[in-house]
Length: 276
Image (cartoon, rainbow, N blue to C red; front, side, top):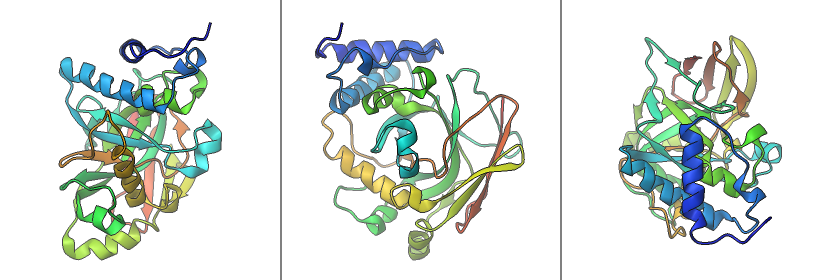
């Protein structure tokens, strides 16, 4: 029987989501039995999950922005960007010598090639993309491995938020410092580049910067504006890592596969990862 969402349901939903994550199991979407479960409540769950994960020793280090790629909105039935938290337990630098990652603990994992920013200053609401760029200390290319604690990737937008923003892991390639004298070049290139995605040597998709709300800087700007109106979650801060959404479609992955990228029009290296 469907019943209205009570305040204490935020606690219950957070506990259920965390239990599913820890036990590598899937659960029914929260919206199936809670018709009043909206984005406001979902972001309150995000805040509560942060408290719970910090209390058990995880260090919060940043956020992922999801559903910035407008070309995939109809596929998932989610028509606006969302965000989720990232932790020291979910973010790793890719090692050129041994670029491997385990996906055994992630339900229905998918891979997403993204652009990742490291914040050297705190961006403010009202800034344009050029001003946002001035807050970025480094840029990298990475693979986010997303997951769904909801079977068959069936959910509504609030479920994706309460389900950790669908974040499973982020694997970051080489970090490149952003120098002030190169800002003008980066500003142009970050709205024009392309990424080609390969599985076991065969190209499976190709996406362009404009897919993610016009470019990764625009995606970050969207997050800054969204958080300016969020009563439960802190604004983007100095030192935070933010990954800005998949440039291509997200693809299901299996152990034994090798995924690689080629970046066209941006001075970043393509990356490669073997999944275990």
